[in-house]
Length: 158
Image 1 (cartoon, rainbow, N blue to C red):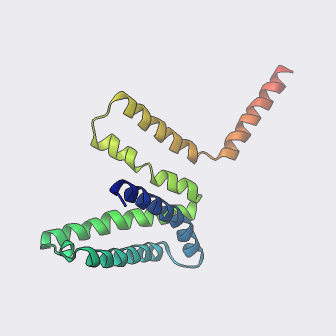
Image 2: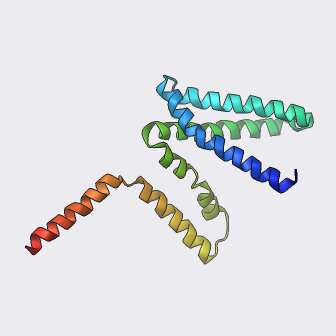
Image 3: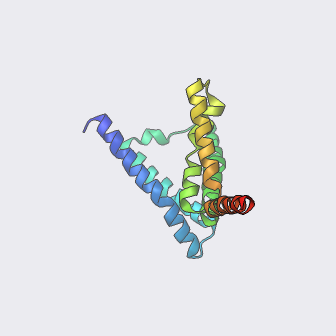
């Protein structure tokens, strides 16, 4: 299998598992596990599977000096733990589809804070941010407000 096909296949697999993550996180939470338990289990299982994969592929990848161990540990604790815990809390409190869309606005923040942007990229970032804000609006409240405004205008005109 050539590299491009393998890459596409891996993206499809990753997307499928990531899409199922919110559903399984919510089910585990509803079964009585805390947000921290769910996050810990996810990281533990992923870490074990990744370690076995590395051991099978190239054991030398696990060789780190003390500086590498400290950096990897801090990154894992701060970045991974905080993002998984935040995601699991959001899945408990808002619809999974909204939590997932908001989680995937991260490329916008990388673009905005880490790169020089041209006009098209700036407009794209603004559109994506506005779309995320629109997702947060309670659609029923929004529609009811429109209906209320239309009814008030009809009453005023009569």
